[in-house]
Amino acid sequence: MAKLSIILPSYNEEQNIANTSNVLSTLLEEHQIDYELIFVSDGSKDATYSEILKAAEANPNVKGAEFSRNFGKEATIFAGLQLAVGDACIVMDCDLQHPPTVIPQMWALWQEGYEVVEGVKSSRGKESLAYKLSAGLFYKIMSKLIKMDMNASSDYKLLDRKVVDVLLGLKEHNTFFRALTFWAGFHTTTVEYEVQERLYGESKWSVLSLMKYAISNATSFSTLPLQLVTVMGMVSVLFSVVLGIQTLVKYLLDTAVEGFTTVILLILIIGGFIMISLGIIGHYIARIYEEVKGRPKYIISKVTENVQGNIVGRG
Image (cartoon, rainbow, N blue to C red; front, side, top):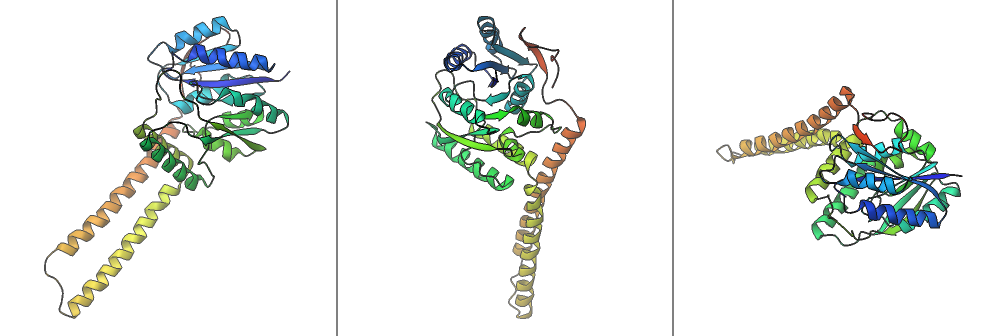
């Protein structure tokens, strides 16, 4: 009988663990799906891991792991995939904003032969205007950078075991799970869902954290920002040529303006381009530095008793 693994990244989600475990267990048992729930606590500061231990004691199908510190959502996803033993894996939010009712539909599509089932948002739910605008801008930029339509994409998706093995085989340190599933290819389909409201707690994402996430993922998955350096250089040269011709013509016509206004303006524009370019290049050098060090994506400090194998410290 095929088995489904559900990976649930958890950061300060002590209020959601028990409810999420009960809701998912009840749903999957009703549809007679053999399953395991894998909660990965991302160095939570509250009692998230204690709640995971309680859930694992109450249900042998619940597994859990705790990071030694906060490593980020990408790390928790890959740690969950590493711990999973199912023939297919679903990644979803621990707060159930990704509706569990879609899972049977994903499972049925996988049984039909689809190897990737992407969850596509038909509605973003209740979000602030600033968050909606920043999220919309983020997805538009990422779609341009990786040349894939990610405007309604999410981390909510089902992956066949062969897709999971491909992703786990990637050696890169800085990963972007949402885009990597597009990059990997395979036989793919989509299901629509509406983002649900949280029952407990608050979202851990802010406009600032979303901006940092966008920059990190843009530079880890695309070299287009580096090409902007060349574009800025060409614009700077073109601007300098036009300004030089204008200055020469005015000088020959004896209408040149005295002073250093033009020179100062030119220095400021070119200097701005140079500083932006250095910033972009520096960010990529930092990425290279992180990759060369070869440090693990995450460090697992604790696991529940039903996790097989010696995986503590592995990442």
